[in-house]
Structure formats: C-alpha cells, structure tokens
Length: 341
Image 1 (cartoon, rainbow, N blue to C red):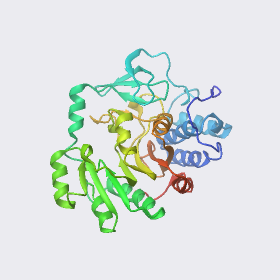
Image 2: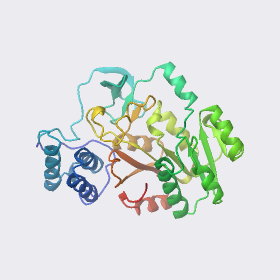
Image 3: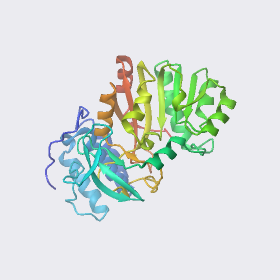
C-alpha cells in the first residue's frame, strides 16, 4: 500500500492517532462480524477525519484485512487519493467557490466534485430546484418509534439538558413528533418546513407561533437548531446553511446527521439503505473537509460523531457550534455514541 500523501483538508481534528483509535476499534468489531463494507467506511472515515497521521501500521493492516474480506486488492487506493484531472463542469462550488469537475452519473443525476473543499454535489436544474423549494408532502411521516424521531429526540435532549437551553428550532421537521414532545417538556420548540399543506396542518396542531415556512421564520434566534436528514437536501449548500446560521444564538449549536461520502463511487455506498443516493432530492454528499469549510465560512466550528448501530456506518452526526461554553460541552462528548437509536 502506498504511503499516505499529506492532506490539504482544512482543520483536521487534533490528537491522531489516539483520537482515531475508537473508530479503528469499531472497524475491527465490524470486521469480526463480517460487515466488511461498514468496517471500511468506519476506518476510511477516521483516516479522512483525523488525517494521514492516523494511518498507523495497525490501521493499515486492518484496512488490508477489510479489503481482503471484500475481495478487493490490498493496494486499493486509500481515501486520501482524491480524484484529479476531472473535466470542468462549468460550475463553481457553492461552498468554497472553486471550479467543480464532472465526477459520475448515477441514478439519473450528474454528480460534480470540488477539488478545493471536496464537496460532492448534484447538478440541479431549475425545474427540479422549483420542485425542491415546494418541499415534500411526506416529511418523514414515520411511526412514533421510528429512528427518524428517536435519534433527533436523543440529540435534542442531550444538548437542551446538558446546556440548560430552552429554545430550539426543528428545521425540516415535517411530521416529526419531536416538536410536540419538547413543547410538553416546557421547551420553546419551533418547527419549520417547506410543504404548505403540511405547515398549515402543523400550525393547527401545535399553534401558529410554533411552526413556520422556511421563508417566514420570525427574526429571532435559537440556542439549538436541529437539522436531521436535511443537509443532503441542500441544492444551494452555502445559502441554505446560512439560513440556519442566521437564526443561531451567539452561544449555540446546529446539530444534525447525514450520510457522508468517503470517496469512490456512490454506487458502493455502505449504508443499510442502498437507495440513499437514489432519493430524488438527495443532492449533496458532504465530506469532513467540505463541512468544515462551510462551518468556517459561517463563523462556526464543526465537530463530528458516529454511532455503533449496525447499518449506519456512513452516517455522521455533526455539530456546528460557536461559543466557549458550547465548545467545551461538545468536546466532552464521546466520539462514538451508543444507544442513540
């Protein structure tokens, strides 16, 4: 296996390889269970998150064993071998402004790659953009015990109780049960979405001051903004994320999750749901570098977390935060959460 080249990704997390050790241990556990694709996602994700310094001989040996289990050559390019020399797509990156290249066509979508911040983004035409701006009727309309609700409630509770916060915006909430649950706990919980009939129904249910259209949010700030399974929908990533940053209190956090891209074709996405990138309005695949760049441009710091739940190896829980007290709380959290689902 070739030696890792220096990474130019901004803001790699400190403490590698020690900080990467929990991820490597989880990768080995997945390997022992025969879940090779998930093991590779955990290990390669750690190498990207913490940089080439995390590529210890033990980590590279584990990677070789995982590749062998997948039937792939031991010299399969590591995640820091990013694509180069791509045909110019004639589009500037919505996060860093650099020229994007044509990456692949998959599921009827043209995916573009930014060599500057490593964002992978789908080209969205005007008719599709107009449809996306209308929102979705379903809006995560899932059973009460669905993971869609449980993981959001878990992280909201963690931050609201841990920092004694009382104001939360649930962005892209759809039919989520979480706004009502938090309101019953005395939290000032406000929901937000795009689909007008859904918004009307939720305002009738929760109150006219507790649910809004994205473009009609009141000019107030929130301690916590929840955005679960939202960032992959951002057709204009920089502008869409700025809507959240503008509503964040000086001491606050945006918390959410999405599937991250660790390199290679999206067709090999290591998810329990192979259709993740087939979804019509999943148009942005984030990397650690692109989300750090986004956060920096918004005056925020990005931190990342994983879960030990089988089938969610590509899922990354992120916190975009500001303020010394919030930063200290985020730094105290475990690298890998257990029991989120």
